[in-house]
Image: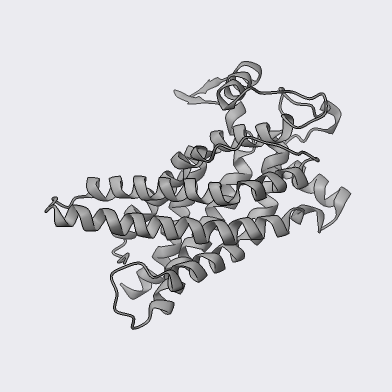
Length: 288
């Protein structure tokens, strides 16, 4: 069980990353387009997230493949996200779980400990920012170049790989890490906030339901994960949205304003927490 636990935490994180992109990528596409185009001089203007989504579906369309409905425009750049976020999530959740256990050591407390959670989450976020930065640069550039875009056809990328190669060719090795400092700050600060909220909400819900003699079940765990992960995500983006806007500006083109609705983060972060917790449970890894 010790060997499974050592690798299982990273596997659970991988599952969480895939779920995050599957659920959250359309929201991210809308966010990036709002950040990019609503600040271009004489550029495209979206009234809100719903208007932006409708424009994407209208101009970039939908298509069917083997009975699955794929919203093509909303999943632009998803390839690099699936690779980057899955890898990042695996590393992050593995680092978080193991570092947390190390820092807690012999501390006897069922309650969340800020002196453990904050540095652990910030450290994990700082490490994974080096993975996230290149994948998000490619993702953002792919997202802003679709049909409903100001990017000239002659300057568009044919695929995420083409985007990465052209960036390396034209901007060098440092170009693929453009926005690295902002990503570093966003991830270290944001994850410290995210896990502080997540751990406290999770602890509070378990305590209240346990006091009420609520019957424990997998459905119960899923509900707690959805609420705690979703609220953690709202807190994350409430804290770091200005940094994320700055990152999009740096990685695409100069902008000054963007949408400021942090509730877009709820579905994606709830989707990350639930598969992570369920995977940990199935692998027999205790989550304190």
